Image (tube, rainbow, N blue to C red; front, side, top):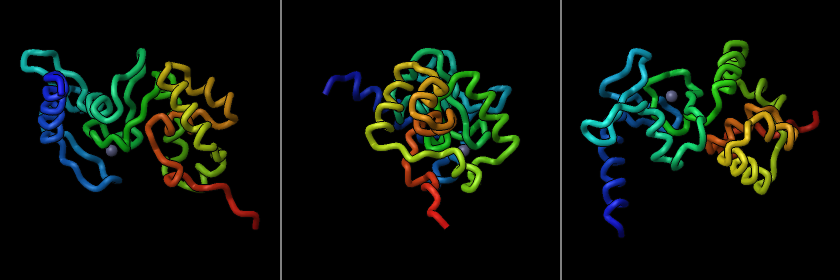
Length: 170
Ligand SMILES: [Zn+2]
């Protein structure tokens, strides 16, 4: 194994010791220094400029972040580093998501069910691939006929078991 892989693993170990990891659904709070907006700060190397801990949590879990995408919090909790609470988006997605959350809290299945169309595994794979390639969630959403927040959440790696399924006929 190349030495770079060993070094990367040790950075990951160092990173996760600074996170209060809990149950999968809980917020995993950064337990070290935070920036003025409340986001955890992490230095990959001593002397390097700090980066957002939540962003690094995403990179450790999913790999490099394409383009100028940003890591957003579904939980609206800046120090949270739970990869399950993070999703990739554009600045526009982030604003739209915040607006949507203001109207209707995320996690209300009846609200979400209205916009969710069940995608096949192949479609999910393709949607994730396009998102990673830098296509906007709105473009991908139009292609698959779903709401763009569905694509944002898919890009976060959520499984369909987390989504309400289509409603049974009454
Ligand atoms: Zn969280």
